[in-house]
Image (tube, rainbow, N blue to C red; front, side, top):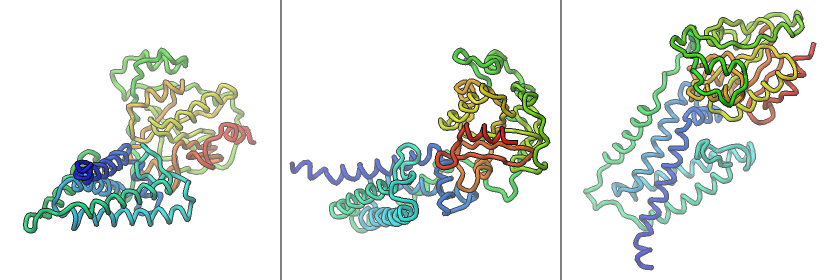
Amino acid sequence: MNNFKKHLPLIVRIIISFLFILSAVAKSFPIWAFEKQLVDLGIVDWCAAPYLSRLIIALETAIAIAILQKHFIKSFVIPVTIFLLIAFCVHLSIQMYEHGAMNGNCGCFGQLIPMTPLEAVIKNIVTILLLIYLFKNVEDKPKGQNNFIVILFIYFLSAFIMFFSFPFCPCSKKTEVSTLPSPIVPISDSSSATSDTVSEVASTKITDTSNFKVKQKDTTTKIAKEIGPKKTSSIFAPYTDFSGKKVNLDDGKKIVCLFVPGCDHCREAAKEIVALSKKQALPPVYVLFMNEEVYQIPDFFKEVNRVFLYYIIDDIPTFFKLLGNKGSTPGVSYLWNGNIIKSFEGLESHKFNADELLKAINQP
């Protein structure tokens, strides 16, 4: 029993270190989700989000390391950590007051372990109690042996690793859309797919992706040639090159989807659109992919059993701006001459609904 009490402070330090490491790693994959959360909360804009997100994750990593060493452990590391957790609790309390205690994901463990604000507050309080216990049972190095440079080195090393591991392009005031065609990633195995287009891509040996084009069944001839609303320029107008094919999204009827290649909900929305196309001829479907996990694009098309013309948006802030300030994937918009007749986004009140899309398309 005495042996356990002797080692208990070390066990507590390891537990706290593990919690902060887990939090840092969870926020890093994918890091764009954490950046978006900071923007949605109104803390920073998209230009500052890449910097703040990496600095916060670096801070959590530094705390995880610093809690295991002895330099200023009692006089600096533990008090600063308690102060940060109290600040997080205050922020979470405001979120609970505005949106409810059980609504949303606080983002403490990123997308890996979703936690409601109330669960996050409880977790933080337990961690604070552990830190208070630790404060009473640990000591700094003997006077004269503490070196604050060690603490600074831990943080700056953590920050360097974050910025080196997750590079990004600094935000420019004017975002330009690349005119280069989207790269086509070959699908190596189509054994489970039945779509003609999927099979064609799978059997094609690609040597020059710049000249490779994905064929999409043209259903526009089956749709009544209605005059429609007056032509206008939509937010999607700058995107004119889909899989090497020139497209005017503001001409006639179009369905524009904003998807993340690895997003399960995006794949489900795409499957619903494919199923809908079997019931009725739909306007051409074009996909704007976010530049995240693009290697999953072939699997995306194989799973939904259809290949759509697509474009990869390199700038993540631009991608989310197309969904709105607080938009989230999957996003689906039905356009007619550049007018957005119906749009869907996220998983809540405005989530994609195939019946509503069909109703909007059939509306005169």
